[in-house]
Image (cartoon, rainbow, N blue to C red; front, side, top):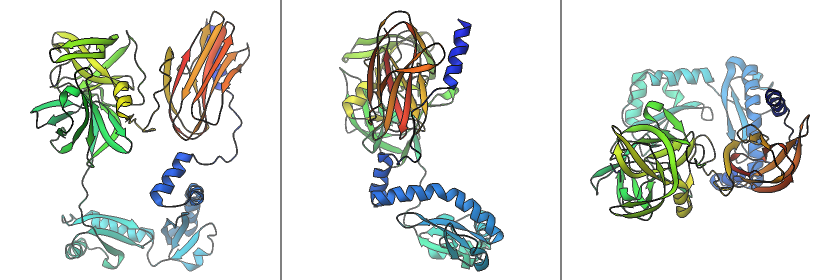
Length: 481
């Protein structure tokens, strides 16, 4: 273990440019997932949520127009009430008469004047009791959050700022920075006296944490981050038989969905499609950092001194003590967590990793991805080929990997789509008829998940994933004749 034919190409490209798509409604309703979250977190009704989203979508153009019309008299804008009604502020009652697309509030100070006040505060070092400050158009003031009014007033005076343009608000707790969960970073288990490496950020419901190796800690063990800041607690741990664990992190930690590739830079995680034998994979760990190799075997059984571990993946990537738990990743697809092996990064060797899918399923976890749906689907694994992607409403994606495939025999084409919750994603199998792509089979129910089969003759085929409504990450599987 390691704790420590050229004409056809042109034809296909032209066909991709002209990809057809289903007829879309002129005004689609917002995704149910977004409406549900707004209702829950803002305490509003579904109708108010729909009205709010529409108002917020219109606001950008309205604000730009109002600011241009009001010129030097513009004093900012804000949303008000459960339906986010737009309010525009101005210092001129006369100029206000030209604004008809929003509510108007006449105030004493312009946005430029407030900006000058804030800039003067920015140039003066604050006391520890002053926690933050920002322009508030609604208050027509710069709002200073502080735990000591006396300290704040002295600081404002020293900065030479207009005291009448500043509003003090009580603030009990000083803000603290968040620390990022990044695959490959070190973390420490004080009760055990050693160091391991972070695998991937993953959630259980709304609770954030990260995956790692089971032999790194037992359920209940506390952890510290790479910076020795208190980090979290092991909630799931299995070793031997398996070698996986999940650490629940505290509120000081955030997850951008990335791996620290050290010399390779910060790498996004966008899914968890499995790399097959012969495919390349790389590993990030806190001892030897970034190394790459190839997958040699899936479903390997390993006889460690501590006991037998099943269903690991064997690679020729090197690793050393302290790399345990670290991230194995192929491209932007999470593979698993470093388990153990032989050799080192001077002489080489064999390293095994625990596939991440088993832990995600067993622990009820979802992988956190970069810039996308924090709950990416992982289905369709039974198909011979799987692909992942992310779409926003109205977009299409072609597979395999933006291209087509040729079938030289008659037989069954089977496709599967596993989309995110509360959306309507559709799957189409398309065949080239000599001049254009035509739909041979479809899965276009109002649900996020689709399956289709088609008994086809030899020819050129492709799959198209369409986000009819809603946005998020998906997994698509296909099996060819």
